[in-house]
Image (tube, rainbow, N blue to C red; front, side, top):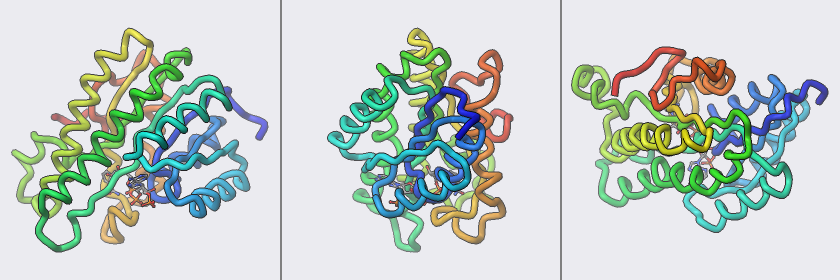
Length: 243
Ligand SMILES: NC(=O)c1ccc[n+]([C@@H]2O[C@H](COP(=O)([O-])OP(=O)(O)OC[C@H]3O[C@@H](n4cnc5c(N)ncnc54)[C@H](OP(=O)(O)O)[C@@H]3O)[C@@H](O)[C@H]2O)c1
């Protein structure tokens, strides 16, 4: 890997789907990419693929809801790189889209993974992000977390509007706003991304967008000039999405 830019980017849930593609695109742009995965075999395969494509790629085991895994992740990054430049909180679930009614247990599990985990991971990595001269946190959200969209586009999106998923992403949007204010003093910029409806295990084959395009919103937020960074906003392909 000869074109390394000296920056370390961590992407959660990167063994497949949009996360793996974000890692590939950032890796090809010269970022050292750290993929977190809960399935070590799949993670190792993803890293092998990225290294073969010319990326400087590494893997760390992370079940995003595990406090001990998060602590181990912070330790690994500190020992291996001594800092972190980019955190992409990408791992997420939509377990309510199984054709069955949702229930409090599914809602709780969804909130744990999609909202509480990104909060806990970011908190644990703030000390390392503070050491970067251009630290950014991107929370992989969704337009389904937009209250404006729920109010105005209900007829188009109602089939996807399950309580756990939509409120987890609405919560992630508010977390993004809060983090963008509270982490600014530490030099950490924070925004949320809506990738579009993307063909993945979560998005299904019915989605119109391929992962290459789905990864582009996060990649542009990582690479956009610092002066143009949309602090605290939810963005899709460079355009702000209303809350
Ligand atoms: N696809 C879309 O249309 C779409 C639209 C809007 C937003 N998004 C968001 O984009 C993100 C990525 O979604 P995707 O479409 O790429 O889905 P995906 O292909 O299903 O990938 C999800 C990733 O998250 C990981 N993950 C889930 N729960 C985890 C946990 N508890 N601990 C560690 N890793 C966990 C999965 O790991 P395993 O393989 O081990 O399950 C996988 O790597 C999600 O946050 C999703 O909400 C997607």
